[in-house]
Amino acid sequence: MSDLEESLLSACENNRTEVAKFFIEYGTNVNYRDDEALHLACANGNLEIIKLLVSHGANINSRNGKALMVASAKGYMDVIKFLIEERKKSPPSVAQTNEPQISPPVAPSIAQNQIISSPSDSGKNKNPRENIHKYDVTELSKSFGNVHIDIQESLVYAIERCDLDQVKDLVSKGAKLDDNSGSMLFLACKVGASQIVQYMLANGVNPSVGDNMALVHSSDVGNLKILKMLVEAGGDIHAKIDKSMEKACNRNQLAVIKYLILNGADIHKDEDSYLIEALSTSKIELAKLFVELGADIHVKNDLALSYACASGDIKFVEYFVEKGASVSANNNAAIKIARKIENSEMVNYLVSKGADEYAY
Image 1 (cartoon, rainbow, N blue to C red):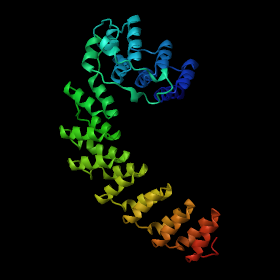
Image 2: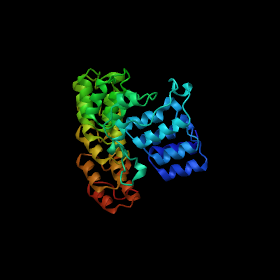
Image 3: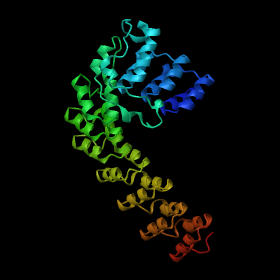
Image 4: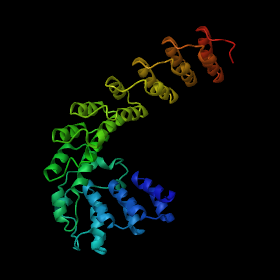
């Protein structure tokens, strides 16, 4: 793996035109990962980067013409027209497209009425997806001749935009909501598209598809509405409950964590590891939630109080002491930590609660 190539991909993915330009002109391999940089630039509609990549050797026909598929699915007409013109200069071979060689026409009139400026044309548009218009995949595919617009890829972008109407339209044209791997449902869960998830479940998508990973994804993003929807539709909350808890805790998703615990997650797993992990990463509200739901504050010789002291937050320390934590536990560890971080207020408080004022 090359750090230069990976840096170029990152710049293209995040729409950093000047950074991408630097790496391209520096001589970075623009064909890395089958021209992934070009495809990322097309996904953002950044015509400036696209032109620069092509001028430095990027192959617009790689991966069966994915660059044009992505631009078409996104609706970036300036990018579509550029790629079509480039194809006319050097038509793709059968090996490149898996289609018969037919020179594609210029962009059709049905699409010219929906021209969308790319983000590179104006500094006002920070999010290219905000300007996506409706388009008819069938008409685009037909009008572009040998250009195959992948309807499943179009469905992906519609889900990413949380566009339920477009999803329904694509399904009516043959797009599949359920590919047996659960990828479409997982994506809808990841982007928080609750209406689309509801539509999928109502149309036969199994909430447990892909080993119940939809529940994990909804836990990760903290979408309690979707999580409940999946469970009510038959998703097995217990199948991946530890994984769901791990994801939710990492992202501090309090409402989801509470729901998972109330529905069977073991709050005492691995000697109250959830509480200890929350404390060790200074997630104070999460730690309090665990305590309120029954976590053992005395676990590992009142380690929770030691972490509270290390946070430097006197209110946090007071909270644990009021809940019954021993100020002298573990050889007066709490006051020793308070002295080490030079928090005199905390030291005085602990002494007032019975800690050994001479402990160092």
